[in-house]
Length: 321
Length: 293
Image (cartoon, rainbow over all chains, first blue to last red; front, top):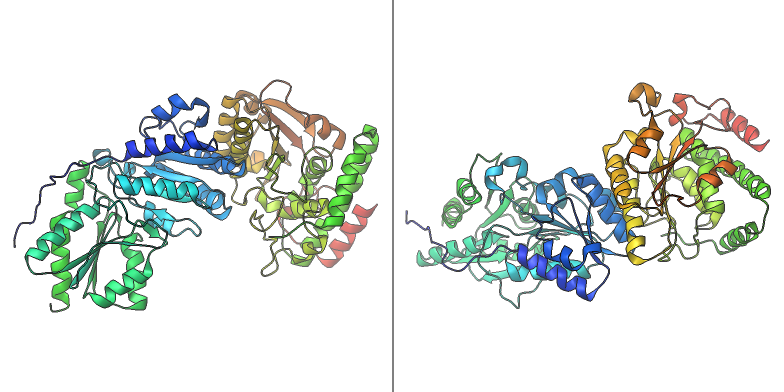
C-alpha cells in the first residue's frame, strides 16, 4: 500500500492563546464575564486575564467540585463564568456538578476543558481527557463543542458567551493548522462540509480534521472520492448531514481524539443505524494509552492520515467497492 | 414554571412590613405559629404523596420559617430580582419543608402542594429551579448547594450588590468533601455576606452521625476554615434571629443549629427510622393533633 504519511507543512497552532485573547476581549466589553480556575492560571493561559482583571479571576484552588459549583453560583448571581481547568479533572472529578448544578439547574456556565484528548501525552491516562465527550454527551441540556482550529475556537467561545445555557468546550492544545474556512457556519446541530465526495464520508473533529483532509487528498489520487465533514457540535449533532452522507456515500469513517465508547463515532453510529444503515469504522482511543508524547499516542491509536486512509479502504472493501 | 399566588404574596409582604416595628417577642410568637402551620402542611404533603423525608423536614422547619419569615429580603412576585437574597437548601431531600414554606410566602399557590411527587408535578422529590420559583439551584445529591452558594456570594461582591446568601446543610451532608472545599474557598475570600446553617439533628439516613463518621468538634472545624461560628438551638426562633444577624467579623458565618429530627411529633423525635418513613393514617392523625396544640 502507498505510504500516506504527509508531513504537516502548514504552520500549526495551540489554541490556548486564542482562548485567552477572546476571553479578554469579552471581559473588556462585558463586565459580567469572569474566569474561574482551579490553580490552573498558567495552564489555562489566564495570566494576562488576571493582570487586566485581577478581581474577575476567581481561583478556588485545587478543588474541582467547588470550581464548578462556584461557577453555577456565579451564573445564578448574574455573571457569565468561564470555568477553566484541565479537561480530565474538570469533567471527571466534577461530573455530578456539571450535571446537577449546570445542566439540570440551567445555570449558564461555560465549561472550558483545557489540554483535552491526549495533549498531556507522557503524563499518562490519568491526565488524558478522552472520556469527556462520552460523559457529557450523556447529559441533557449541555451542548458539547469540539473546536478544531483558531477560527473555530474563537467562534465556539463567542457562541458560548451568547448562548442561553451552559456548554462544554474543548480548548485545543495539540498544535494543528488552520483548516476551517473563516466564513464557515458555527451553529448547534450544523456540520461543516469541508470537502465534497461521493464514495465515502469521513467525519472528523478537533485535531483529526487536518488529518482527515490529508487522507482525502491521498484517496483522491487513488481515485476515491472522500467527503470530509466536521461536526464542531458533537451534541447536538447535525443528524441530517450525517444521514445525507449515509445515503449519498457507501460508508462512513468517524475520527476523534477521544474514546470510541460513546463519543462522536457512537453519536454518528446511533443516527446511521436508526435512519440509514451503512458500514462504519470508528477511529478513536481504545483502552488506556501507553507512555508516549501526544503525537506518538495519536500514531499509536491510528489517529493519523495513514490510519484514516486504512479505515476508509477497509470500509469500502466491506461493501465490495 | 410555577408562578406567584398574588394574594398570598401580598399578605406575606404586608406581614413582613408589619414585623419591622414589632417587639421581638411578638415576632417570635408569630414565627412559632407559622412553624406549627408549616409542620402540619409537611405531614399532609407526605401523607398525600406517601413519600418524603419527614424527619429532616421537621428538624429544618424552624430554620426555614425564621429565614423566610424575618430575615431574607425576597419578593415572591419577583423571584429572579437581581439583588434578591439567595437561599439554597443543600439538603434537597427536605423539599417538602421548602415547598410548604415557599407556598406560604406566595411563590406559588398552596394548592400545588397537593401534587408533591405526583406524576408531572413541578414539585419533584428534590427541588428544581426551572420549575419552582424561589429555588435557586437543583439540589438532591448532597454537597452541591454549598459551592453554589459560595458562587452566589462571590457574584454579589463582584457586582457590588448587598444581596446575602444563606445555605442550609444537613449535618450528615458535612461528610461530603465538596462542602469543605466550599468552606475553604469562602473562608479564603472572606465572604461575609454568606451564612451557612447546619441542621445539626445528629442523625443521618442509617444511624447517628457520630457513629457513622463523626463530625465533632464541628464548631472548631468551621473556625479552622476561617468562619465566624455561632452555635444555637435550632428550634428557638429568637436564638436563630440573633444567629442570622450579619457577620460581625468580616468572615462568613457558620450557624450550627442544634435540632431534633422529627421535631414536634413526639413519636418521630430523634428516631433514625423516621428519616424517610411514611406515617400511617393513624400516625398522621396523631401527628396533626399534636402539632395543632
